Amino acid sequence: MDLQQTITGFDVWHLALPVVSARDHGIGRVEGVCEILVLRLAAEGGAQGFGEASPWSVFTGTPEASHAALDRYLRPIVLGRRVGDRAAIMTEATRALAHCTEAKAALESALLDLAGHITGQPVWSLLGGKCRDSIPLSCSIANPDFNADIELMHRLREDKVGLIKLKTGFKDHAFDIMRLERIAQDFPEFRVRVDYNQGLEIEQAVQQVLDVARFRPDFIEQPVRAHHFDMMARLRDLTDVPLLADESVFGPEDMVRAAREGICDGVSVKIMKSGGLTRGQTVARIAAANGLTAYGGDMFEAGLAHLAGTHMIAATPEITLGCEFYQASYFLKEDILETPFPVRDGQVVVPDGPGLGARPDVDKLNHYAVRRSP
Ligand SMILES: [Mg+2]
Image (cartoon, rainbow, N blue to C red; front, side):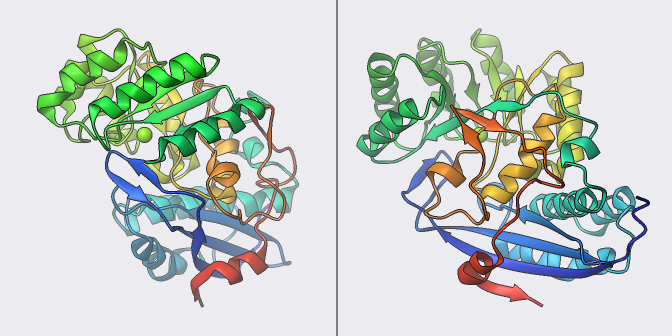
């Protein structure tokens, strides 16, 4: 297949998806609904490709900005181009507008899904080939009602999920320590990670991180603000529990600086931060080249974005710490895919079908849409 087909369709849905519970993170809360955007590309001959943008206003950006990025700024770069010109299109997208990394991730996902459907190849094949068939799933413990999270952990245990990430720094230190003690006592089989989502003030950070390190989590993620590189480096030196950077590292450029300044032992790689799957791979490779580990993080996503992340991790051996694609199974009242996001025995199963391996249900997109363009 030469991928000479012209891209002729560009549809955008802005969705509000109901969620089952509130989630508290250091930098903010999500409750009620989770807002995402879905892009559908169509090519001559009828092939289609889908991509998702999963913004969060306090972290990457707003859904309104993602909508404008796709509908107004990226649409003219894409329509009329050949499916095979993916690298050129993504380079122009990067230059056409600053930030809006979630919209760029949606665009690259849709271009890859489209090319995969035309050629019959899975997206992981288009990204360099597969290094794993499954990815350990981590589920976040982030409910302000800890009793509800205890119920969730019982369900995770039944589902054979072995990794949990405790979200800390949104209430107080005593609440964090109480939950760590309770998990250690009642759920000793879970491997625990801790994520502050920037929730600590500089004055508290040293003592609280040292207290949490006594529980020996796999890693402690982003305790302080994204721009506090010096404090991240200092905290990293204080404990032998690995420190992960998330909000401090969006794309490859941040990763170079993070490695140079020694702020972390590893990085959370997210296609919504890096601005696409190939840039996510680059972040992981820069980390690995500097002796650092990488984790497959995500935003508040639906199954379509989980699929894109799954293919990216499947083709990126440097991402070794599992993934957190739990929202489609444990957070959304209803996911948007036609078939359930594939999780079995606590592992995300890498799809082998063409493109992303599953599609959104267009009836659901129309049902949950707050706006649609054109
Ligand atoms: Mg994080």
